Amino acid sequence: MDQEDSTSQSGEMTSWDINDIKLPQDVKQTDWFQEWPDSYVKHIYSSDDKNAQRHLSSWAMRNTNNHNSRILKKSCLGVVVCSNDCSAADGRKIYLRPAICDKARQKQQRKCCPNCSGPLKLISCRGHGGYPVTNFWRHEGPFIFFQSKGAHDHPRPETKLEAEARRSIQKAQTAVSPTSPRLKRCREVESLTGEMQSQEAWPLLLSNQENYISPCSFNGHLLDKNPQEQINSCLSLAKNCGFGRSPYLTEHSQDIGSDKYYEKCKEIGSREHDSRDLSGPSVCNMYADYRKPQPWNKNTTLERNPCTDKCCNGSTLSLADLHCEIVSPQNCMDSSIQHVPNIPPTTKAGYQPSRPNPGLSGDDFYEGKLHVNYNSSYIPSSFYHLSSEDPYLIMNSAHHHQQPSPLTKGNEWDFEEERKYTNLDYCNSEMIFSLYPLR
DNA sequence: ATTTGCGGGCTTA
DNA sequence: TAAGCCCGCAAAT
Image (cartoon, rainbow, N blue to C red; front, side, top):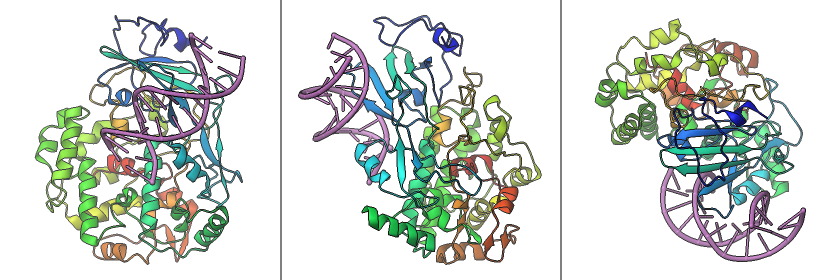
């Protein structure tokens, strides 16, 4: 029996079963939210834990009717892979997140591999006696009880955030008109499979372009708007992620991690959507503690470095600078970000098992304040490149102070150089915003 | 458009 | 009866 069958990670006895009429009431310490629960584990979360409230998991879990309204049951959908078993330029495999909705999932499987344009296939989870792994959630008073049955027998899919980022890229594709041969191939494939157009392929289409794309564009805030709207959206997004000067953000840094803080961030981000005032010190220092090495992110530890120090010196920031700064990943990403092997980690938990730091709640991992992507899924590093044909980015890049890129060799993109300088392979927009403070 | 939760209903062991 | 699955609906995102 797994140790976690008898003891939760916070030390609580877990001699209970989710179906018990009466569950433990004398829970002394709740568990830290587990993003990748696996095997036959049980956890007791606080009912205040937002992730637990939302029954979140980075596995693609769908709701399953167990005819018991008190116990929510979810079963794993597995992972979507490339039928050609292709590998990206850096050797990683394609592990897409299955759409939760049946209809969307069927549609997803008609699309093509973002890497090789081959057909996609769904690997079903059969980790529970040949059936999918099941997760159970039950709310009882101040606690949320979680129980997992079965061990996932497939790679981890991309996280929800990564999948959302990928979809944003898909939307962005509709705003540009790529003419890459790769896209043409993909379209041809899709025309044969009845699909109108591949959108996942878009990031890779840009792998030979020499310009950068702002991470703002990840969420589709940039490419589908006019230039000013793009900037405003980018600003809003940045503020939502904790950047920019805000009375609340600067005066209530002690609230970081709390619901109150995040709700306020969202409110401010929304209210100041059209604001042009980005002057003043950034709130980057509020994130300093988040960069401290953590047991669960030792592969992605960010330490202080000239870049981040430079970025955090509290000088003023203009709109153009915001775009400029965010746009230049090679100037800011810490080279200590390491590649993670393309295998599921052997350790069970992705996070601290208990709650050692109340200032950094489990909510953060899904709230965009701290998201270090250390899983095995694939986000093309070329997300950060953009065709020079894009008029908006030409405009934006023309008037700021971006230095000539060491990554470009004429029109060729050197993947080795790219990794050397940027190490962005495992990044997503949240990570960029969280880990790259303004100067 | 997609996710999420709910619940009816069917099949199988 | 329990478990697994399919389906449709509604609300939320």
